[in-house]
Structures are given as structure tokens and as C-alpha cells.
Image: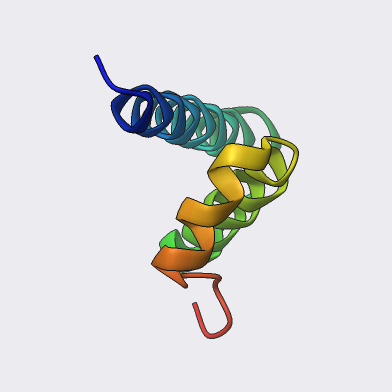
Length: 74
């Protein structure tokens, strides 16, 4: 396995973990607090969290810059 594949794997696992967390959080908010956010708001939070978490991983910062997908208008 190459280093590139390992870094993509880290980014993939991070993305899945963050998405699951925010979806589960939204589920709990809807059930227990009767609060509801739009899918766009949840997507924005997921993307922001991925950027925050990955910014601490120096090798992943380059991948995030190449994606150039920071949510400005989501």
C-alpha cells in the first residue's frame, strides 16, 4: 500500500466518522429536543468539521486544498 492510499484512507475514515456523528446528533435533536436543521446546514457542519479535524493532520491539508470545497454557500 502506498502512502497516498494510506492518506486517502485516513481522510475517508475521518469523513465517515464525522458524517455519522452529525447525522446521529441530528437524529437525537429531532427526537429528544424537537429541533430540526436543514440538510444543507448539516452538510455545512460536516464539511467544516472535516476541515477542522484534517487541518491538524499535515499530510491531509494538501488534499483539502486540492478539493477546494470549503462551504461558502452551502
